[in-house]
Image (cartoon, rainbow, N blue to C red; front, side):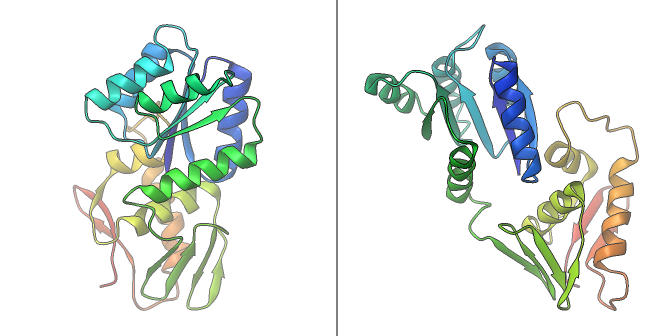
Length: 223
């Protein structure tokens, strides 16, 4: 899952980004309202965490513009304001949820998970393909009953492949969802991680799940 954090307090933004990355999310961050709006318009995100008070454009403006452009990405709005009318203004602008600063990271994480469950991609926490199983809550993977040890990026890549089972994914699409906004698509890093994942998921099994589509990208399928 890929998340955009738009927060002008750099210390807060780093805290949120680090915490989410430790939970295996891919995170882009912006400290400016205008840049944040551009990233939200041009990137493919599963959730946007958006501060209200931002330089350039505030969170209310950004939310209204995104909704007017029919961008329906769930938005969690952050603010130091606690008045009811401010929360109402945020929700009326098109935000999906509202969290008041200071907040416990565990609560932010729970709200992010809740917003993801509302989306089309997060209907289940248990993903499977043949005898491969992935639990998105515990971050544990098994194949044929045997545990698979994954790094954070390998986990994120496997989850993305499973959520798009039978769909051919280009290297650009994979980079956009698994790596950050500034990823250099000219490198072979994606191919390297696919090979690492193949060694852990397919080695020793007659049925291979991860396939290369020459000139296009990769697909996870059961046959």
